[in-house]
Image (tube, rainbow, N blue to C red; front, top):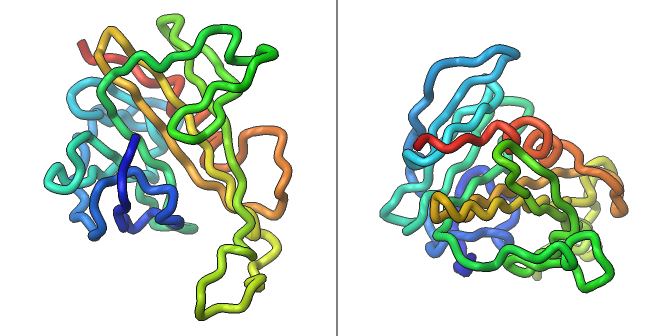
Length: 208
C-alpha cells in the first residue's frame, strides 16, 4: 500500500507507516461484539470480518477523514502501547504462485517486504508472511549520537507482515506488528507477531 505517513500513537517507526497523512487522528472505536471463551472477545472490521482479540486490547480505527481505506490499530494500557495494525485494502491480483513461496525462485514480495512463508486458515485460505529487522542503535538523528545507546533488550525492532488475499470479499487484509527484542537474527515469529500468527489471524471470518 503506497502512502506518506501518519502519526498514530501506537506507531514506533514512521517509515513503516501506510497512511496518507501526517497528523494524529482521533481513534474511532470499533464495534465490539459478544465475548468468547479463553479471555478473547470478538470485534468487527468494516462490516466485512469478525476477529477474536485478547480482552485487554481495545481496537481503534483511524478516522476515515484521514485514511481512504479502513485501518485499525490495537491499544493496551500496559505494559506498553501495542504496535499491531490491520489494513483493509481493495483486492488486486498479487497473490503468488506456489513456486514463489517456499520454492527455489525469488521470494514473493508485497509492498517491499519479502513474504517467504505461508500458513492455511479456515476456508482453505493462505496467509503469506515475513519479517524484517531494524537495528535501533543506528536509527540516529542529526541531534543524537550514532550509534545510539539502545537498551540491549530492545535494540532490534522486528516488523512482521501478514497478508490475506480474499478475492470473494474483494479485499486484501494486511496485518502488521512490531516486536522489540535483543537479537538481530530470528528464526520464528515472536511477541506481537506470534499473537497475530497463532490467535488473531486464524480467527478471521467473513460476516456475509
